[in-house]
Amino acid sequence: MESEKSTKPISGYFMLMVFIILVILAITMGTMQVPAASVVLGITGFLLLPGFIVVNPNESKVLTLFGSYVGTVKVTGFHWVNPFTVKKRLSLRAFNLNGQQLKVNDKIGNPIEIAAVIVWQVKDTAKATFAVENYIQYVNIQSEAAVRHLANSFPYDNLEDETATVTLRDGAEQVSLMLEQELTDRLSRAGIEVLEARISHLAYAPEIANAMLQRQQASAIIAARKLIVEGAVSIVEMALDRLSEKNIVELDEERKASMVSNLLVVLCGERAVSPVINTGTLYN
Image (cartoon, rainbow, N blue to C red; front, side, top):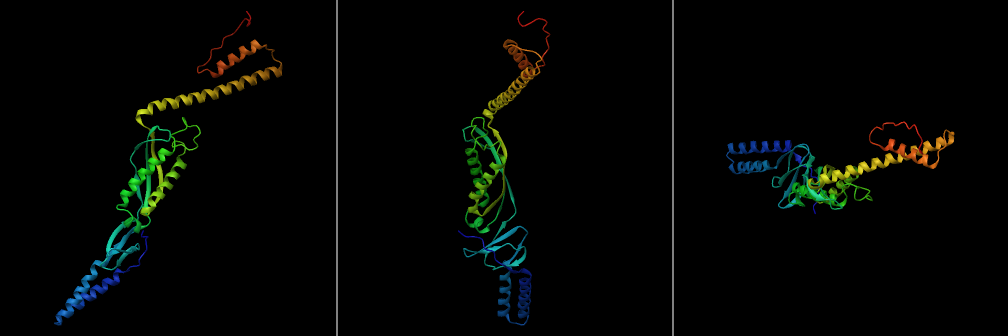
C-alpha cells in the first residue's frame, strides 16, 4: 500500500518567467524568418502551461505520472510540476460528520436509538486516494459500523445488568474514548485521522421508551424510600438510646413498639402528620 511522500515543486513564478521568455523568443524567431525554431519554442512554451498549480491553505495536490504515484504537494502557493502528471486536489481541512440516528440493540437486547458526531481529517493523502474507492463514503460507512458495534457492546444502563461497569448512558467519557479508538483502527486504512468522536443522541426506542421510563421512575422511588427508611430507623434508634441514657422515661416493650411505630409514620409519611394528644394510656 502506498504511503504519502512529499514532493518539493519548482517555483511557479520562476517557470512563468521561463514561459514568457520562450514565447518572446518564439515570436522573435518568427519575425526573423526562422519558422522551425519559432515552432519548437512555441510548442515548448505551451507544454509548460499544464504544469502550473495553485495550492491553497489546508489543501494538497496528489500527483501521478502514467499510473505511478509521484508525490503530494502540500506547500501552499504558486508552483510548477511535471506537466504530464495528473493532479488531484485533496482537502486537508477537518470534516464534521453528524451521523444519522441508528436503531440498534444494546448488549442485553433492548432496542435503542443512537447517533454520533465525528470530527476527522485526511492524514495520509496517498492512502486516501489509492487505498479506498471513495474515502468520504468509506468514512460514513465505517463510522456507522463502529457506532453499531459500540451500542452492541454495552448496556444502555445498569437497571438490568447491575454488574456492568460501563454503560452507554453513564459512561459518556469512556464510551467516547472507545468509539474514537475503534474509528481510528477502522479508518487508518484510508489515511484518516479521527480528531474527536462523541455520542450526540442516545435514547430508548419509541416502542419501549414509556415502559422503561416507568421502570426508571419506580427504581428511583424505591431507592428514595430505602434511603428514607434507613434514615428513619437511625433516628428512632438514636431517640430510644437518648431517652434511655437521660432516664427521662422508662418504656416497656409495648410502649417502645408504639413509639417506634409513631415515629416511623411521622418520618416516612409523604404528607404532614396531624398530632393527636393521648389523654389516656396504652392499656385503657
